[in-house]
Image (cartoon, rainbow, N blue to C red; front, side, top):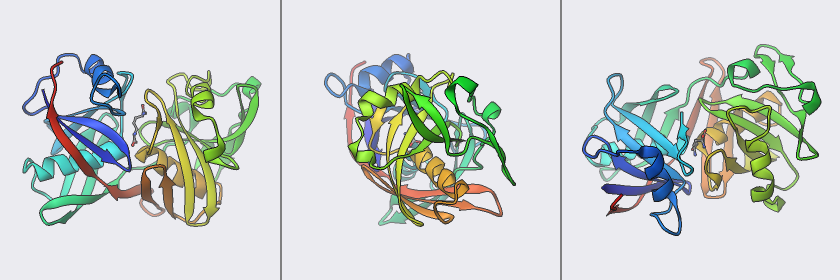
Length: 290
Ligand SMILES: N[C@@H](CCC[C@H](N)C(=O)O)C(=O)O
């Protein structure tokens, strides 16, 4: 099977052209390919397939084989793949995902895509719509915030015997944003799984550990459901932007600094849509026997 290894801010996936290749068992293939010792090594697998409603379809799998509904870093690389390979020759294109069709604007230099601005859609905040099931025992309270409705906003959540202030946001997949003193001082492999499998998140959750530097800059580390710590998470950066704005910590345009690079996040008040801009990079191409 032919593949291309690509990354967006160090969040790396193996991309397969599903217009030409057939992947029999994508879940199993994702686990094998993602293995950093016995496989290619990646945060997961993305198969680019034909779509009836958009220019192509992004079919994404985490490193443990679970299927993701949306991937912010992945979708920029999908756009670069189809543009650079001459499959879709448009600087504005659409990509179908399991959380809807997204519109992307490509910034092209010398015939190749360098950065992409994605309309990530509207954040969803109501706990019942994003599969968050808070119980009194967890101490995580729902509040009303005009004009946003019911939200979990900087509310204390007991995780593994410690209280963490959490804001819950869905950007097509579930996120839990927590503000901490020093994201880089945390033992993420120890604490991350306790968030991921916490009973209030029956479908699991992606967790962002953030430090607000000033009204335009936030640092974050992320523990992704299904992949563990990754160097960046596009939907996560958008959830962080939304959480910071909701809590009044930043302005509506935020530069999110991740382990592998920076993403610009803007929450447009009028359209209630989040725009994310960042790089898309091809690392190498190869062939693997499954
Ligand atoms: N890295 C991604 C998100 C991938 C999916 C996530 N782990 C999930 O299962 O929801 C991004 O850049 O958004």
